Amino acid sequence: MTLRLLPETVVIRIAAGEVVERPASAVKELVENSIDAGASRIDVVVADGGRTLISVTDDGRGMDARELALAVQRHATSKLPGDDLMAIATLGFRGEALPSIGAVSRLSITSRPADADSAWTLAVEGGRTAEPEPAAHPPGTRIEVRDLFYATPARLKFLKAPRTELTHTVEAVNRLAMAHPGIGFTLSDGTRSRIKLPPAPGDLFAARLDRLGAIMGRDFADNALRIDAEREGIRLTGHAGLPTLNRGNAAYQFLFVNGRPVRDKLLVGALRGAYRDFLASDRYPLVALFLEVPAGAVDVNVHPAKTEVRFRDPGLVRGLIVGALRHALAEAGHRAATTVAGAALGAVRPGGLPMGSGGRGGGPVYAAQPGAVGNFLAETAAAYHAPLPDLDLPPGAAPPAPDAIPDADDVARENVLATYPLGVARAQVHATYVVAQTADGIVIVDQHAAHERLTHERIKASLASDGVARQGLLIPEVVELDEGAVDRLTARAGELAELGLVVEAFGPGAVVVRETPALLGETDVAGLVRDLAGDLTELDEALALKDRLGDVCATMACHGSIRAGRRLNPAEMNALLREMEATPHSGQCSHGRPTYVELKLADIEKLFGRR
Ligand code: ADP
Ligand code: MG
Image (cartoon, rainbow, N blue to C red; front, side):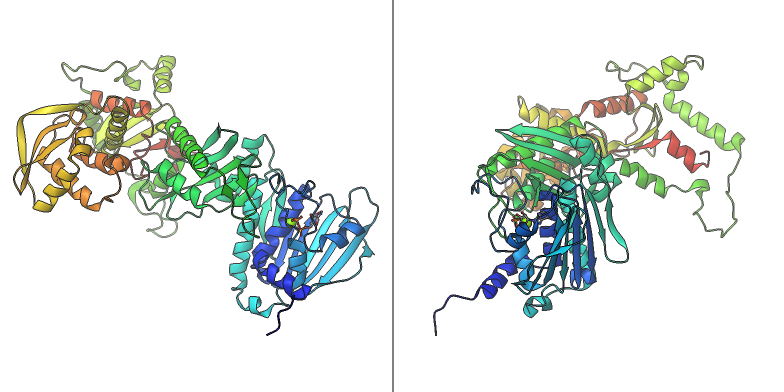
């Protein structure tokens, strides 16, 4: 064996292996360079998933002949003027991308500085650099990469199908575009346009939301909460989706640190924490968060691909994210995603017949029998509105029914409706849903889901203040259970007592319940205790009950006063609506499902072909 220094071409190829893993990473490096060069538009073309051609064209500051020659040398960069790795304000800083790409492909760079009257071009093939030559090109830079990895056949073999490589490339460009909404981006696969993002106008939040909507979908833009928080010099901005807008995987969770897309487990954990009470554990919220971290509080020099960072104080960053999101979610009050109504409308078919079942030209089938059906409905509705004797109404709980206000008094009617976002209860149907009239539509509330959420929030609020109020049972109730269930309940007796439920072991096969949470009212104690014992088998032992409040509250609410199947009078229905309006997070149950659906009059009119 001979110990020797490796030749430069081999050294570069080794380094290139880390910087350019696949076509998407080469595109990412080139687009980052264009962003660093102050470009206002960046156009990318890839052929065969980037294997035969990648080209990136920008209108940035460009390079002269001397800079061109330097740019392709290892560790040549214009971005570390003070040699200070703590003060990195650009996406690049390692001076590795161009030489690495040049080492494994046929690279050509054509560039012209804004103030020069001619352009220069430079070619690098498999690491061998030619002399710069004069060329014709508008101000800006065009970089072409042909036959990526031709010089490293081992890497070439690992490339996936062009379609897969293209997907990675589109994702990489989209991610950079999300963080730089002021720049226009296009990406074409040679035949079809894959990305077309004009520069987004407006202030930071407006431009960003516009850009995020274009990439993550309109639904996100329509249902995202604005995030803006700061702690110890670290600023967090961005947008976070309402819990009712969720997905089965984490593909729509983005974190950016100083304009750089990063992947960090910290985000996953923080989002879990922030949305824990509002989403089932297998559902993921959609978010795009942007951290501005002062130099010195973050290290981006962790990996050549620059997609990982190290925070000096990860706990601080996590706390900032969790706190800001929880705050925004609380502010959202009863808001639920508009997608819910969209999905509901999609399921509604006019005329009661499946659309298209009658073939073409079937026409609408409207049964116009106002006499029979209409009268019946009117009577039923009237029965629901019959005033109930001796009701103790909470103030404001039962505004007058809008139609009870004389026709002439439009103002009064609008006032009532405008005061109550969830409207005025008009009927209960199937002893399960409350139908309310709002200023510009109708709201259908799942009374059980809503009540579950309200119970959850009440327990949470009382835990935070002076504890959950309990009410003693006149006669303590003995509930027979199997031994395992008794053990599980008594092991958690302390925690259950905090939540308002006092249980003790009562021999080997039973517990005695002495007190229940006051806010549940009269409950089916035995059912509640059995179901809670069931919950406890499924709950992670390491988790405090408080941290799985959603599950416990769901069970409690099930045994509380308002379940599905319980008749509600108008006062109760309105009280439920008013409480929902006043309670944070009441737009969704503990598992991310909506507690109500709102249909706008405009949409209903569309259903009936009136618009
Ligand atoms: P880094 O980005 O880390 O500095 P690169 O190898 O990616 O390293 O680029 C080397 C240098 O080439 C950059 O520092 C920059 O001065 C110059 N450069 C690269 N791409 C462009 C571009 N599109 N426009 C202007 N200058 C560029
Ligand atoms: Mg670079």
